[in-house]
Image (cartoon, rainbow, N blue to C red; front, side, top):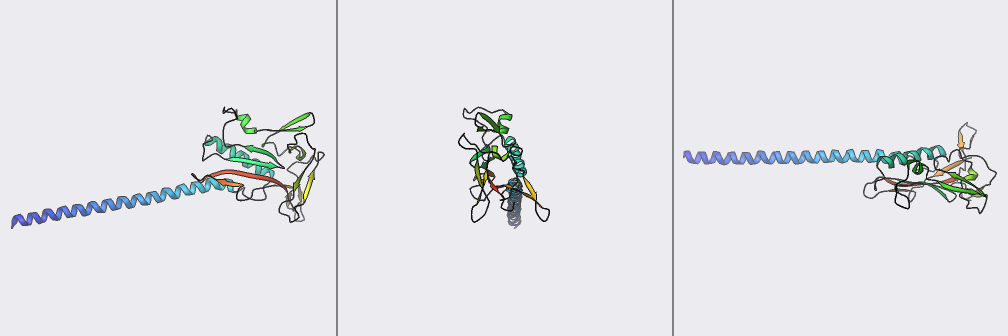
Length: 228
């Protein structure tokens, strides 16, 4: 009888141990799920905050000041991530077919590193007869509009389209037009209107990396503001 009682007590102790162990395992796994959910939430919040810096410019009405700010942001982001694939960003500014860009790769054609100055400016050469002028993405603001087209010696004027107008009317930019992309006027409500705007249209103009979800490339195109 006594041996039977001891056996039952031992069995109960083993069952209780198994029960307590099961509870501990359950709590550990539940805690792990909560921790993972928290980590995933933090990662998503960080991703949204990162992309939000650039999505701010996903609009039809960027000014030249916005463009320069974006260019600086893209460049500093690429420097911080050391141009790692999946993290670095390609920025392109289209001015009547002349492309000014900040590449997402830190290499030139010979696969050698560029100097910081060379990379910062990423120059396009613009020719006017025998004269040649270099214009970078960072000095677009102060360069006369008539010097922003890569003419290749073929013409001294080009046209820009008024944005979002049914007639797709254009404005001729001649070689005598010395105004800059900062050209503005005040409307009847004393609101400052920029003549030149840079449009980023969702879709191909704004891309994300599949593997990281981060912004991959941004394209802006110069138009005439129809409100001007």
